[in-house]
Length: 320
Image 1: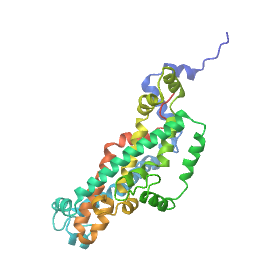
Image 2 (image 1 turned 90 degrees about the vertical axis):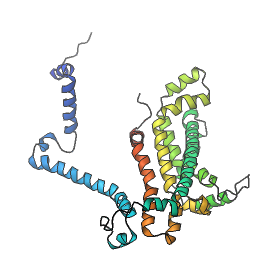
Image 3 (image 1 turned 45 degrees about the vertical axis):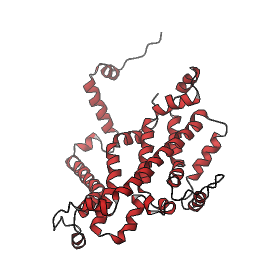
Image 4 (image 1 turned 180 degrees about the vertical axis):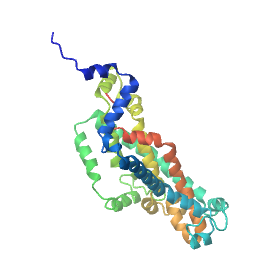
């Protein structure tokens, strides 16, 4: 039997307490950073580095929350106060009535309802197309799978303006069916579903699922549908949440495509309706309407930020 020498470091590592082990790992992480432990002991680094971090944090907060707070301030001000002193805090007092007035006069509720319908339909169609397409390419792996994957990847290099006119002509007269989808929500839902980026992201996530689990399910007699609904989809909840949130926010702020396919004002979302009504609405009500329109995606992100950041940060679905 071959004996291996036991070093003093190995003995100390094996006998150290959990608290000591955490401290040692923290020190090792600091040593691998840009600033070493010796440099942190210097007064300039000790006090200067936290100050820089605080300043950077304040700058990021101002850049992120500042426009939203200014929009709220303008939405609760009079039109004269917005034009005379854009940075002053309510010289004429807070106008709480702007929010309900914008809701009724600008018909924000109706436009937000259209936007919610568009976002929900886009969410369902996107998840259906992306999950099924990624399942075929990643799990079933047909012979023509690499060709389709390459074709989907190639569409990412095409500017969106190039496909705008052909897609619009397709909506005016659907192939085979010959149906005009203009002024219907299907004209927004169907193109939104065929997103190459979401398909590739979903496929990359499905690739990280161990093949042993898939083969074991097949040995147990699971069909492809059962494999998809009972194994792949439950293991992919983080990436499903990311794609869902990105789809909802993207459809909420989309402007050009709904403007083309939904010319009827009764069908238009909030992103198309607000620029149209600004000519007949005073600026204070415009700011209130903009704040109500921006508030929804911000709240969605704040509510689901944990799932979103977890899904983005994970490099694989399961760690083996």
